[in-house]
Length: 356
Image (cartoon, rainbow, N blue to C red; front, side, top):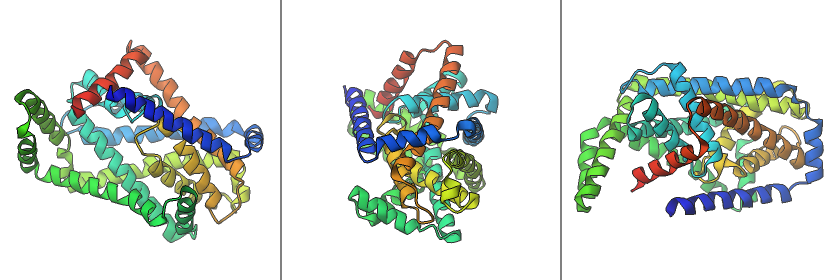
């Protein structure tokens, strides 16, 4: 029942955001921009995203190494299927699907795998925040003005936007590091909290806590943590290249003062959009992604980009991120004789196991 409500909430939010996205632009002008775009850059953009996914696989392999050594060639399909599931299922159920799929293929505990996925998400957010800070220091892109503008358009005070984009991830990373550093104390604390539950529930939660802590063991090593951040850099640079190539398709380099400015802005839009649309609700972040990407482009002070044109750009970027992963993930599932329906049940069932 709870998952059904989550699904409808996610889909309802998607619909509302898409309606807002469309009613706040000149749709005819947006489609005109779409028809005039040069789509020759789509295939190279997809290639950049697939390379980014390869680096994600390398990073995940490193996080899983203390539990089991898995070849990149075997892990890459699992990552793709997880992203495919996130693109079609609400509430980021793809994270549970990826963990379950890894467990099915490699015998790694679902909760331990889920712990490593959570670490990835936090490291991604912190890496993107670092990107924003570095760009703000190097190029006068008016990052502060962009945040203030987003605040005005959303009706949320910009300091709250900054806090919402930083504090949860910094706090989460700190907690994960503490858990990894003091696993026994964490488990004792967990056992004490849930000691009031019936024995059968307590046993399940205790087992989940043990395997979750095992999944975080890699964070004990400062060298490994540094390696995670270093590998995260090419992940997001290659994804930013996708944003950059689609920008060329829409001739943004002519509006923004050249290719160097477009490259910097692409990294900035990538960072702000991915942090802002990381809320676990709509499948693939549809609606929220487009709104944030569009408004970030409109608010950038280096040039004037029409909101309707920016909307077309945001739609193409998101489609380029979503569709290839859905298609490739489906091909992988077909090869393993797993249906979309079973994939849906994987996410729901494992979500229940972790949350019960």
